Image 1 (cartoon, rainbow, N blue to C red):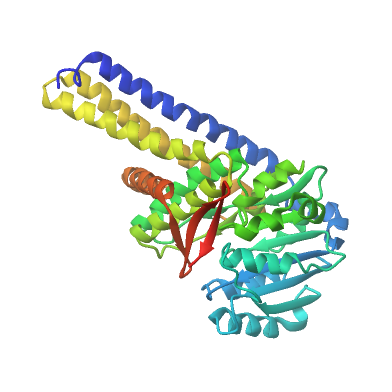
Image 2 (image 1 turned 45 degrees about the horizontal axis):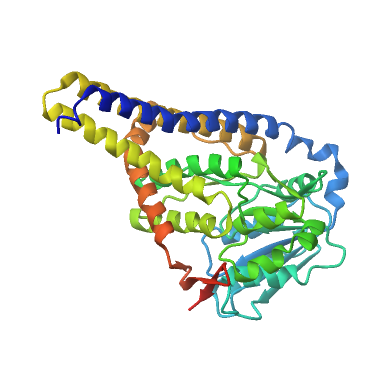
Length: 420
C-alpha cells in the first residue's frame, strides 16, 4: 500500500492520463477543422452543378420491422431534389409489418414523389451465411438498372433532407471517390440517462469513424464502377453488416471513401434503456472487429481510457486513505481535469456538427450550463458502458440483431457470420 501512495506513482498516473487524453484532443481538433472545411457549400452548392441531379441513381431501403420514423423516411425520400432516380425497397417478407407501411406510403405519395419508379419486393432468399440485411442489399445490388451510376442506401430511421441524394451523387462522382457516407448524431429529447450516454458515446464514435474511414450505412452511396471492381457484393455475402465491410475492398480496388458532413442525420430518440444500449454499442463495435482493419485501435481506446481512470482513481483514494493528502489531491485533481476536458471535447464536437447540419435546416439545441453539468455527471457512466461494450465485442461468439441470432465462425482463416 505504501507504493500506491508514493509520489512516483502519482506522477505516473498523471502522465498516463495525459497520454490518453492527448490523442483525443488532437483528433477532436482535426475533426472540427475537417467538418468546417468539408461543409463549405455542400448543400448550397447543389444548384451550381445541376448535372449531378440528372445522374441515374437508385436508393435501396432494406426493411425488417416497421420503425416509427419509417413514414417520415418515405415522405422525405419523395421530396428528393434529384431528377433521375428510382426507389428499391426490400422487405424481409410480405408478413413483415414494414410491408404494409411501405405499400401504403408509396401508394399515398403517388404522383407527387420525385422518384421515377418505386419497387417493393420481399427478400427472395434467406441464406444461412451473412445477415438478412446483407442478403436484402445483395438482392438489390445484383439487379440494378443498367444505366444506374450511383446506388445509395438509407436506414429505416434516418430521415433525409431534400438535397440528400443529389449531394451524395455529386460527392460520389468526384475524382477517385468510390463511396461517401454521413453519420448519426443523437440529441435526445428529454436527456434521459441512457439517451445521454448514447449521445456522449456517439460523440466520440463519430470522430473515430471519420478519422479511421469507417462508413455509415444509414446514408451511404457507392459509385457503380467501385461496386463492380471492389468485389463488395461478394464480401457482404458472409458479413454481419454492409457499411464497415466496405472500407477494405474499396481501398484494395484503389477507390477512396469520403465522409460528407452534410449527410449527418440527427436523431432525437430518447427511448432506450442502459442494458439495451450497452448491447447496441457492443454490436456497433463488433462490426468493426469483424470487418475493419483498424479495429485494434478502437478496442485499445475503449479499454485504455477506462483502465487509466479506474487505476488513477484507485491510487488517489488509496493515498487519501493513508493520509497522503498532497498525493491524493494531485491524482484526483488530474482525474477531474481529464473528465472536464472530455466534456469540453464533446462540446467542440457538437458545435462542429451543428454547423455542418445547419445548411440542411437542422438546428441543434444550444449548450446550457445545466446540460454541461448533466453530461459531466453521466460521463463516468458512459466510460463504464463503453468499456463493458468493448469487452463484450471482444468476447462475442454470437450476436442478436432484430430478433435474429448470428453465430461468428472462422472457416479457412476467414471470419463469417451464420444465421441460426
